[in-house]
Length: 216
Image (cartoon, rainbow, N blue to C red; front, side, top):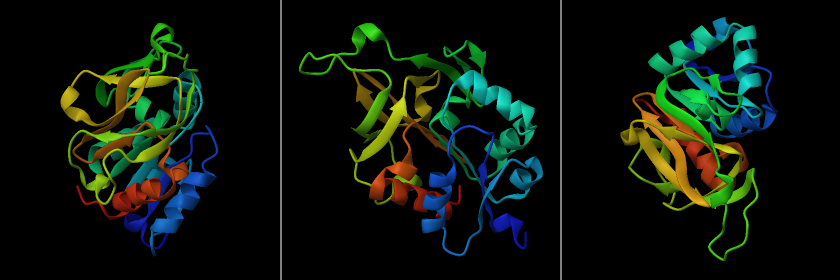
C-alpha cells in the first residue's frame, strides 16, 4: 500500500455484504484508496476506519474475535477517524440484549430490542420488527458529519435493536419507530449511525463524503 495513512479501511469480519459500503465510499473518496480488509495490520495502518455490518450481535462478536480484529478496531476507535454503521454502532456498546453478549465497551450503555407492546404507529396500526425502511433522523447537535444534510433528512434502516447510551451527551441524532431511539452517536474521533448511509441516496453519500474529509 503506497500511502497507508491515506487509506480508508472497511473492516471485514465476515458479516453482511460490504460491497455496497465499499462502492459508496469509492464514489466519494476522490483519490484515496478504499480497501475491504480482514487483516488487522491493514486496519492498524489505515488513516480512517469504517466499521459496518449486519447480522446477529453474537455472530458478529464471535467473528470479530476469530479474525483477531478486536485490538485493531479498538485502537482505531481511540486514535483515528472512525465510522460505525448499523451493527458497527451497536458493537461499540457494553452489552446487547441480542444473545445477552458483551460488546466492545467503547461507549457505556446497552443495546435493546424494540419493545413489542410499544410498536404502534401514530394511526394506531401495528409496526413490524425489524424496523425496515426510510425514516427521518433528527440532528440533536451539530457535527461535521451532518454538514450539508438537512435536519430531518431520511435515511434507510434495517434493525430490530437500538442503542441506549448511558451518557446522553454522546447522542448526535434520534429517530422514531414506535418509540424515539438513538440514531447516531458521536464522541471525539468516533461517529456511529444506526442507519445504512450506503443505501440512503444523497443524504447517505453526503455523510460518507463528510467522513472522508473529517479531521477530528
